[in-house]
Image (cartoon, rainbow over all chains, first blue to last red):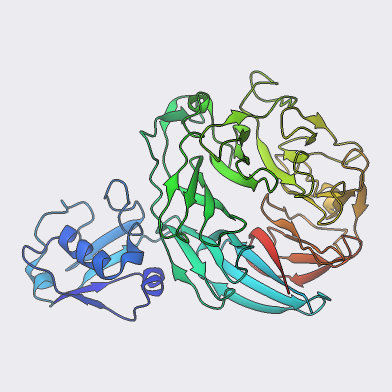
Length: 98
Length: 371
């Protein structure tokens, strides 16, 4: 199972507590994980990736295994530790403020 | 006994304020959607328990929320606002062409008679319509694709379609206003549009009486007299007696004619309200005194309304969608400030009292009159 951690505002919007666990067929990529996430929680559509371009929203970041995956290709394989569920895939609202 | 429900959108959530017809004791609930910007919340007149809210965030984009129980519970509905045709370009701040990009919903206007039909005014300027209670949205592209569209430019707050007025006497007639393009009218249910800005005069644009390019802040209409429109322009309070075909200034004796909201008394079509603001660079009231001005003559002759409002050291603003009126026998008037106060008057503006004092900055105020 893929473990996904959402920022607090999106957990509230999706009515979930804690991590989301998703069954995702191989190959497991950022695109396939986010597709599965949005299929289960359609209210998140447009809040992580832009409706029109499909690209990551500007102030959203994707982290896993202490790596910033935000600029990786969406169809690149995710780290094995994410695929096995050892590590979560983090959807992060970028820090802002003074 | 009749009661009222005030719907408040703020920079950090929505609030619902309930009172009976006396409007002196209030039950405050919220914040709903805490931490999100709530540009507008409005109820359907066809089903007063149906409310729509525009929830938006620089991080997470646009969400539309719907309540079917008067604001007790909410569910997200459709948030996909696709321009119907190739978006094209409008003017950017530096005068270069800029692609039309959806940013957020500024205003939601439920249609009378059908709780499933609602219009949305968006930034970058476009008009959308849903006929399934907000689940899906389709643009009425005739406005955005008006021949003048490539010349439209954003105001300081973005190129927003912020005002939608549905003419109760002419079901196919719609008025909209866009900052900073101006006012537009459709007589065929939104298929085609014409600018209705004749008589506007705006310093700060190359052609001061141009057909488009005016920074219209708000339009208002009394439903019993739909051919009469009132306008708070960037500077100037204006009036049209022919559904926007021409306008004349009615700023009269106002201390300043800059401001954002304008509204009409529920039972007196010639009684109108504005909140004068010092200037476009001083977004606060003159002399630190928060004064609503009322005209009982359809403009020109204005009186300050001050009882219960701060008359010293007040430096808040009142935004374009943050004033409204109820339809009780003694018309109630409400407005919210960027300082987080929501003021109510249960006597048509003669006296005021705060309902709440410390909300986040108020973006919008609407009221429902309930039986």
